[in-house]
Image (cartoon, rainbow, N blue to C red; front, side):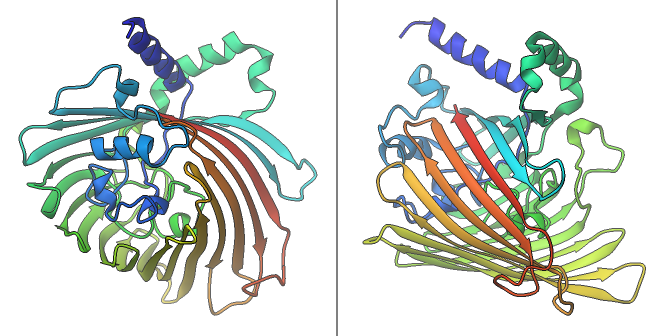
Length: 405
């Protein structure tokens, strides 16, 4: 293979990073069971899934998940890193159309949704260091880039230092793929379905929104049929440089997640989380379910959480309900179609505080390293579980190109 190919690929990724954004390194829970893999940590170095993928995950991306196959190795197999080093990258470019019923609706924009670089260094068969870094992006109007491409690039170059961020970095002790582990650093405490899409209610309103990563100490046990993760966490210091900062809810506390897998086709999980901040204390718990029906090529995913927010400035509090229920269909190799319903109740004791979201999504993986996504999301403010709208509806149409090294 020509030596210029790795250089050209590296240059292309660097250019995308300059104009890119950083997004959470979550996983695809839809591939558990549906791809023949029962544990998320089979495809990811993280014990709970997400982030840099293993050699097994790379092989699966070509042999099982992509329509036309390909080479799932780093740089498409052009160069193989030493055994003690693992490298990777994620790049996502998106275009959106939003409609909230306002006078300026609909609005369109494009933006670099994600650029993340990953590295993992294994010191021996027990210890490893994981590092991730990316660049926060800014939404551009649809006509923004065509005004003056050179000027836009110069602006991005001038501000890229302020937008550079590391959301995950940790030291991990893990003697084997199954068994006990411990890690400490910056990452989300394992909890819930851990979707890629941060707009889902079960991420936005459970302490896992965009840029909410905490400094965490986590330990647990991963077995073939079950796993347990227990964590304590705290946010980055308030005065930390932008490189380490967080922008969302600032809470310190603990979380636990337990999952039991059944007959290589189903899983049930239970979870709890306590988060204490300056304005409130959040007590949270819920259940997770996954069911794979192989003859129909259908995977059902569900999560339901109750959260009690105790307001620090008052003796009162609110009880919330957050849920997700979805069905994923795999009609042919490389194609996934999703229908989902979400419910978020801001205060279950009050009417007109409920939100419903309906999602229709298609993911196509034509070749390894490539993904095309089309998502339509319709949201309503509703007192009832279905319909009975009490406010204006909003809609989102998004197309996305995802490339990974």
